Length: 354
Ligand SMILES: O=C(O)C(=O)C[C@]1(C(=O)O)C=C[C@@H](O)C=C1
Image (cartoon, rainbow, N blue to C red; front, top):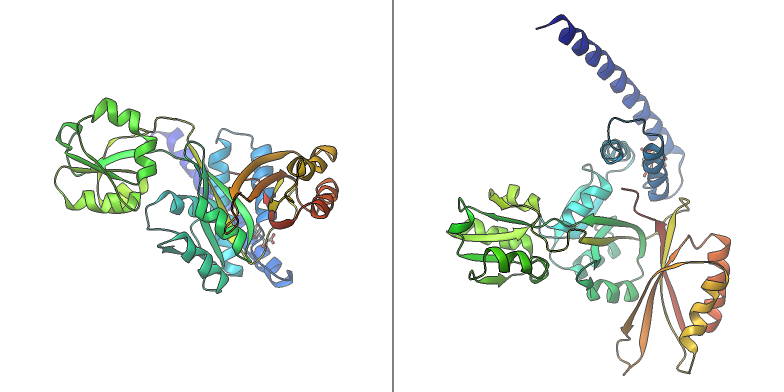
C-alpha cells in the first residue's frame, strides 16, 4: 500500500472515532431531552428543523439528500433510545408506502404492514400503533378517496407528510424482456407505465392485482411472469430488474400523510389541512375562501368531494401554507369557521423536509 493511501486511511480511522464519540454524546443529549420533555417524544417539527438546517449549512461534497439521510437515521436511533415507536403502514411489505414510512421515520421503529387504509387508521386510533402512514394523492393519478373519507371521519390528526418520487421497475425471474409472457401490477402502476408497456411489451397481457408487492410475489412463483413495482419488492422476492424507471411521467410523485393522536408544533415551514363545507346558497364557496386571500394565506390544494349521504352536497379539502398557530392562518381560520356550515382542522405539520 502506498504511504499516502495508508496516511489517508489512518486519518479516516481517527475521524470515525471522533464521529462516534460525537454521536454518543448526541445520543446522551437526546436521552436527556426525552427525560425533560413533556408529552409526545417524537417531534416532527424539531426533526424538520434539524434536517432543513443541515441542508442549509452543508459545505459539501456530500449532496444535501445524502447528509439528510444520514441524519434521518441518527435521529431515528436517538429517538428509539427515548421511546421505541410503532409505525403502521398500508402494506404489504415492499410497497411504496413502506418506502415512504422508512423515508420519514428512518429504520429504528417497529413497522407493521396492514392490509387496508382502514386498518392503519384503526391501529392508530386503538393505540396499537403510535403513527400510521397512508397515501393521499399521486401527481398523475389523483387523490386516494378512501384516505380523504377516513381523515374526515376519524379523530386522528395529520402530523406529517412524505413526498416520494415514484420509480417503477419491471422485475421478473425471466432473464430478459423477450421471455416475459405476463405483467402483474396494481392498476395504478399499470396506468403509470402504459406508454412504456405499449412500446416494449405491447402484446403481453397485463393483469391488475391488489398491490405491487402482491404482483412481485406472483411473479416470483410463475415462469415468464413479471411485475411492476418498487425496487424494494425485487429484493424482497428475489427478482431481477429487467427495466428501471419505466414510469411515463418522470416527475411522478406520491404524497403520503402521517396520522397520529396529535398534530405537530410550529417548524417555520408548515402546512395546515382542513375539510369544510359551504352553506347551500350562491357565492358561499367564494365566501369561504375569501379570508385566506385577504390574510395573505396561500392555498396549495383545493379538492371537492361529494359529502357522504347528501345528494349533490360537497365537502372541500383545503391545504394551506402555514401553521394554524401562525397569526394570519389563525385569523383566516376564525373567519372561515363563522362562514362555513362545517369545518374540521385535520392538522398542522411540517412541509416534507427530505
Ligand atoms: O429534540 C428533541 O425533542 C429530541 O428528542 C431529539 C431528537 C433528535 O435526535 O434530534 C429526537 C427525536 C425527536 O423527534 C426530535 C429530535
